[in-house]
Amino acid sequence: MVSIQNLHKKFGKNVVLSGVNLDIKEGGIFAVLGPNGSGKTTLIKSILGMVIPNEGDISILGKNIKKSSGYRYKIDYLPQIANFPNNLKVKELITMIKDLRGKKINDEPLISLFKLEAFLDKKLGNLSGGTKQKVNIVLAFMFDSPLIILDEPTSGLDPISLIRLKDLIQTEKAKGKTILITSHIMSFVEEVSDEIVFLLEGQIYFKGSINELKTKTNQPDFERAIASILTDNHA
Image 1 (cartoon, one colour):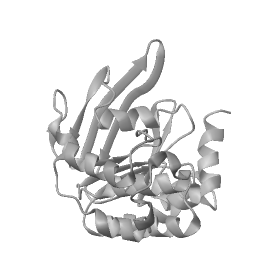
Image 2 (cartoon, one colour):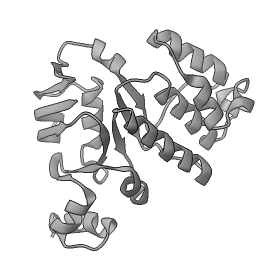
Image 3 (cartoon, rainbow, N blue to C red):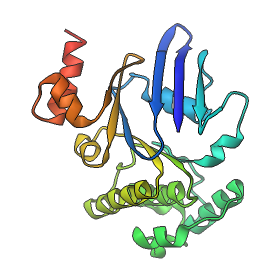
Image 4 (cartoon, rainbow, N blue to C red):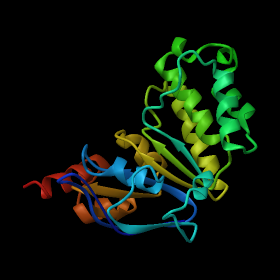
């Protein structure tokens, strides 16, 4: 699904990605983890074509994305911070995104799942942070694309909406989709992920299942295993 070879990116003198090699198979849930400044966002934006690497190649569904933009229509993306005009109504935003993408949407079941019917005629500026996040989740899942990228998807969600998001992610996985997630909520990552990719200082320090990470670090739980990586590399 996604193949990354020798990816380098720096901003000025600041090296953000340093020779990243990563293969993500088709079908499954993969969490990209790492402390702030580790390169997670730059890696995700490189896949999306929002950041141009200094060196290296990225292929999606077997095709190199260099000098290409059409592949983006096969990706659905939930950004960590989505900035839309506050004067837009929810239903106007959904229509606008639909028109921009030019693809058939499946929004009604998602609107029902997250109980957004009462908010469709409300302006974005009048919504709570959690309700905005639910709207953003609808936008991210309504196009039925094979690759879904979710950047901190749990932000602002109440417990019931979080359960619904987890169920939605598992439903999409069952359809054979590939889902990339970044999150600081380790319990969420542990519950939904098939594999994790741990970035540190622009390099991949681990890729595999959570159980494999526990075995490698000789730690009994996931959070301690992650902490072990950070401690061992900053001793």
